[in-house]
Image (cartoon, rainbow, N blue to C red; front, side):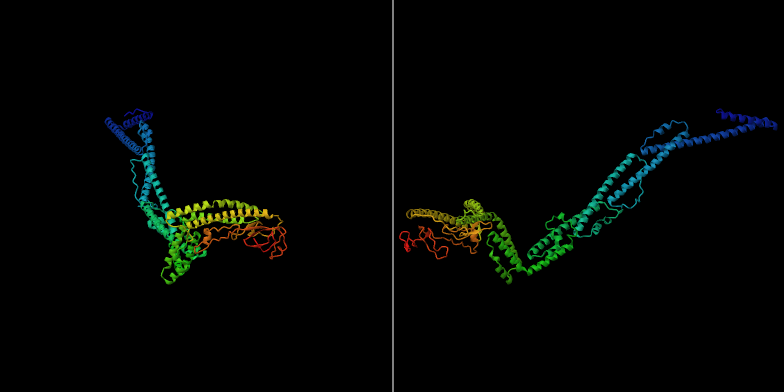
Length: 618
């Protein structure tokens, strides 16, 4: 019955002994027997033992419960640590404590902390998996972005580690990137569809709604479907719109080409053509450069087609005028290239065929247009030779000018502008010296052209080689005439010298003719005198050169006849100063007594210096 221990236990023992002594004293006073006293003490001890036993049982139960609680919480703590992948060194250290309550007190806050972390971790897993399932649904097209996730998200609580969470989050980020890429691609497709619909004049909202209804709702907060079905649908729509655009562009280009042709034929005014300025600009544009809104719409194409139809009907009523205009254009092209136009479409013949109804005016117009194209092609093939012909003609003009200049007796006068003619004469002599080479080179080029095309090179209906050969022959005859004239002049100079030695010669002052224009000379703009075109005089005594320009002035194709002057021998007679010659042509010449050198033909009556007989024949 003695309890050893702390001072409080000793105090209790003292109290129990005092009570027992007091109880025995009371029993003595009462007169209880010893057996009763023993029996009551035994009962008292038994009751005390029951109380202790009960307290021990209660303490044992408490201990068991504490053991169980500590074990459960340690097990839960271990499970949480294992599930969350965290190591808790403090838990390992607290296991060395002796008191169960201390162990429980140390485990409880750790467990509560891990429970909070577990809840947060579970929420993170749930949110991550919910976003993953949501994006997967958006990509697959089975759910909408603005719909909540109905299905409960199942989270595996046995694996809540950061590694697992990072895997989910990495997968989520990958899906988010894919969603962003898909959304960007969808927006690109939608923008391209919008541009194509604008050019084609189609309803954009209706077009994209046929692919998916969400594409037509572009307001904030609205869902945009990004599934493979939507992307494929948009790609097919874009391909279809591009094909439609290509067809319309080609159709409109054909219509615009017809418009330009009809406008050119009909000489349509600018105010009439300006109405179609939007569509005419596509003729020289690439397909990808055509972006104007509504330029390829059905309405615009129909308006252009109606204009073509209207002009076509008007063209049929004005076909004779158009045929006449095209025929004049053909003749102008042929005239510029010195080609003989096709006589089968002559204006009179064409009008007769149209009036008789034998030929369709459209076919006749097409035939003339084909002849124009052919004439232009032939003109391009003849360009090199025609340039050389122009060079030859220019040199021939310089040659003619030089001949007229050489015949001017006052060409060396000190008048104003004389130096300009002298410089031109120098350049002309250089050019004239090149004429033979120009003609030979032109003939070689012409022969090469004829051999290449197996056809003669005609110039206004006459073979150019024949013209060149005729020109060379004429030029040779001209040179021979010049040579004969020089020989004759030498002979005349010898004869004049002989006569002067017989009769004598005395110079006499000549009357100044500075105020009179010499024959064959005209005043130019700067005050100088330049030769004027005239017929060949006795001084030149040479035939005229035939060039394509002189030939082209005659439509029948014949050359001009060469003009030749007589080159009979001339007589010079020297007269004495006192001898006179009377002229009845005016007061300027009457009464004059001067010595003259007169060019006369044989058999002419003159004053005879020897016998003074006026009727003497020389």
